[in-house]
Length: 230
Image (cartoon, rainbow, N blue to C red; front, side, top):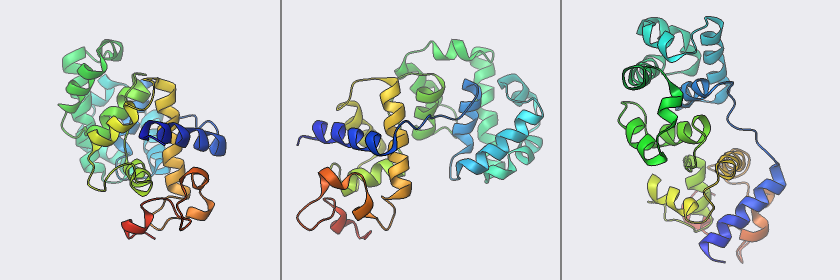
């Protein structure tokens, strides 16, 4: 199969195995943006606790977080870990929103994907994955989100080299799939699901839903033997 066909088949198998993932958990676009920053280097359960703290204080708006002292914000988001760093990153983001768009997310989201990416990436603490998560899940615009699980799955199925960078991996998906928000949303969530359950550092290949199409003669996904992860 070509790379395009392999990527498309991968989606079909994961969708059949896991069904809809209903991502991103968040009641408002701004809550999604906050979650995208807080979820860096932690699990979602911890992020939910931090967001619940902000909600209980009625602080989930760009203007209110902008006015909140950084030390107080840090304590409220403490459950998410790295709370001092993340408080500064959140403050950078809300300062950008208030200074450039008067806190109006609709005005921000009227920008094109390329314009959004350029502006968000200019905010200190907003990296590629966080930026694309905001664009896809908060703005509802088509951009593919790449994370550690995405990289691992593609390496083990011989679709990229281990050294492949974020933008190279992103291009594999975006050149293989229609630019559809719901498709990108579901595929990213499904890759996270298969990564957590099966494509771990020590893979569980025999049980993985992707084994149907991607087994080689030895019975493992192509590339696993070379990763040192087995």
